[in-house]
Each structure stands twice: as C-alpha cells, then as structure tokens.
Length: 387
Ligand SMILES: Cc1cc2nc3c(=O)[nH]c(=O)nc-3n(C[C@H](O)[C@H](O)[C@H](O)COP(=O)(O)OP(=O)(O)OC[C@H]3O[C@@H](n4cnc5c(N)ncnc54)[C@H](O)[C@@H]3O)c2cc1C
Image (cartoon, rainbow, N blue to C red; front, side, top):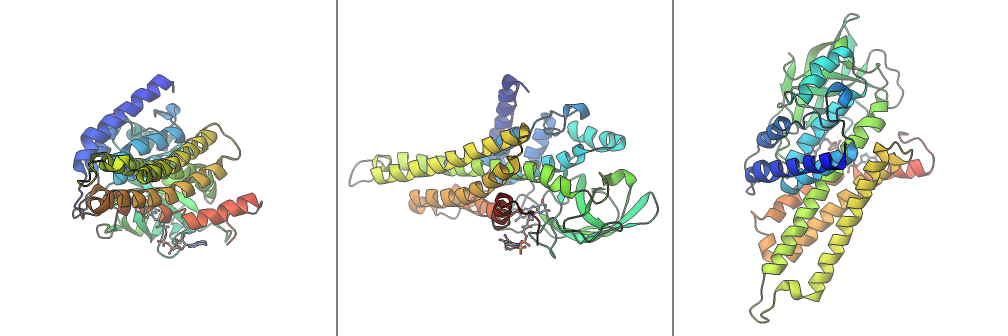
C-alpha cells in the first residue's frame, strides 16, 4: 500500500475512533457492552478485511498497519481496539492457507464487512499455556467431525460470526503443542455461552466462556492440515496478536500522557500563581514517561516492520515489543494518575479506566512471564515450548 493510501486509511480510522468510538466510552464502568458501534463502523468503512491478502479481496495490510490501527482505536477505547484486533488475528489465521470454500464462505464476507471472527484458544485447564488445548475433535466420518470442550476468555464471545477453535484431534500425537484448528460458526448447535465478562477492565471485550457440546463441523471447517497448527501460533497468531496488543496499549499510554499534560497545564496553585506545568520536577517526570512511551512505540514499529519484511529475527523483536509495552503501559498510566493528583484518582476519571484496561496487558497470553522465558530460550538456542 502506498504511503498516501496508508495516511488516508489512518485518518479514516481516527475519524471513527473520535466520532463513533469515543462517545460510547462509559467512565462509570457499570455497563458491560460489546463495542458494536465502533466495530460496525470499521466494517462499513471497508476495514473488515484489513489483514486479508488482496488476492482474497482484502486490503493486504501487514502487522505494522494493524499495530497503528489498534493504537489509534486504543487511544479512545482499549476494548474496541482489542475486539477489532482479535477479529484481524482470526481472519489472518483463516487467510493463512484457505481452501476455495473458505475463501468464499469466510474471507469474502469478512472483506465485505459482513462477518466478524475471533480466536478461541485459551482453556481453564491449561491457562496461559494457550497452545495446549484439551478440547477434542473426533472423526465421525471422513467428512464430519465432532468438537467437545470448553474455551475461556473468548473475546467477541457471542457476537462473532465464527470462532477459530483449537482442538486435539484423533490423529494427533502426544507431541508438545501439536493441535488442530477449526472454524466454528457462531450459529452452530451445541455452543453454550457463559455469563457476561466481569473483568476489572477491558469490560467491552465480552471475553466469555464458550462450551462446545458435540458441535459438528465438516472438512470445510478445518484450517490447514490436522496437527500442523503450531505453525499458526508462531507465524500467524503471535505476530498479529502481539502487534494488535502492543498497538492498543501504546494508544492507552499516549492517552494517559495527554491527560497528565492537560492537567499539569490547567492546574494553577493559588499560593504560587503558577501552573504545575512550570514545575521542573513534574516536567522531568513527564519527560521520563514520554521517553518510555516513545521507546516502546519505536520498538513496536521496528518489530512489526521486521516481520512484514520477512526478517528471520522478527519473532524475538515482536515478543520483546509486547513485553516492553505491557510493562510500560501499567507504569505510565499509574504515574500519570500520580501527576493528576486527586482529580486523577476520582472514581469516574479517565485515568482509572485506563489503569484498569492497562492492567490486562501483562496477563493476556502470551503473558509477560511466559514470553520472557521464551525470549531467554530463543537467545539460548533452545526450543520455545519445552515444558
Ligand atoms: C481481557 C482478556 C481477553 C482475553 N481474550 C482472549 C481471547 O480472545 N482468546 C483466547 O483464547 N484467550 C483470551 N484471553 C485469555 C488469556 O490469554 C488468558 O488470560 C491467559 O491464557 C492466562 O491464563 P490464566 O488466567 O489461566 O493464567 P494462569 O495460567 O493461571 O497463569 C497465572 C500466572 O502465572 C504465570 N505462568 C503460568 N505458567 C507459566 C510458565 N510456564 N512460566 C512462567 N510463568 C507462568 C502467567 O504468566 C500468569 O502471570 C483473554 C484474557 C483476558 C484477561
């Protein structure tokens, strides 16, 4: 995509973020509401197939564009950014190796803005080891399979048209991380949804439990060859997911800094007649936060560009970026709350919402702890999945 085309794309996303998404944000936090308005506006504007290759009718954007789109959305609403990001991760998995039927039945409606998809990987049993599903897929005939199991924290849960579900199949060996992926239609018989997501933040995500009771799928629903989906984890899921996440939380951190800047500029003390913006200690603190944001932002852009251009070390940069961003956003929002004093600590302040949302960044899989271990293993030349 040419740079002019990209600039126009970002401007359109910014318009949606400011005019459609921002007014729906509820600072009181009482309502749990999936960000329908923002997602539908993004689909309507032609962003449903953002990361789907042009060959299949999509916009063919890479992870750098995805990170920047999520950053723009995340400046207004982290849940909208993550819900849209998960749709993009799901669509990139479907688009990685689609059959002709999947191009027509899934990728076309995704690109036409008529279909939302998402990832259903995590399970209560294996938690942050999200690459170890225990849900099963049993072969009923050479054409028909039956899925049983339970998935947790399914973002876009109940609202998506399809779910990319990880399963162990009849044919899978006991080898670590070997599993299969199937696309399950949201309307399938046998899907039962858990209650509304009640997280401390990210409340719009609708990240709920999905039970699958004898859900039948056919050959057309299988993604790639049975058992080879660990390739998807490192080559598709991780790059797209890590960059959607990193972008989102860079957006959250930059909004927190804006809040702090505004407060310091507007807050005057009666006894000095000066604004807090004139205090050198606070200037120093704000500058330190900005440098930390900018370092994480540039690392993320660098990592995403490395992946998009096929550099072999890209995965290490992508993992480092998400780890850095997750630490950075929690610290920056927390510090900005300090800079905004009692006003920032109000129950309905923007910073309390940002802090709640930011706190999810280190614990969404691949979690910060797990990724630090993987980074160490990668540097030591050891297999990433060795426990
Ligand atoms: C808002 C939100 C949205 C989500 N959306 C999705 C989604 O759309 N799809 C999806 O599939 N999942 C989703 N998840 C699930 C998310 O990926 C899980 O939270 C994650 O898998 C962590 O699982 P857990 O809570 O069971 O952690 P646990 O496995 O109980 O881990 C607890 C802690 O121990 C650490 N830990 C565990 N094992 C190791 C290890 N081997 N080495 C070092 N540290 C370790 C972890 O890092 C973590 O900090 C979402 C979660 C949240 C909070």
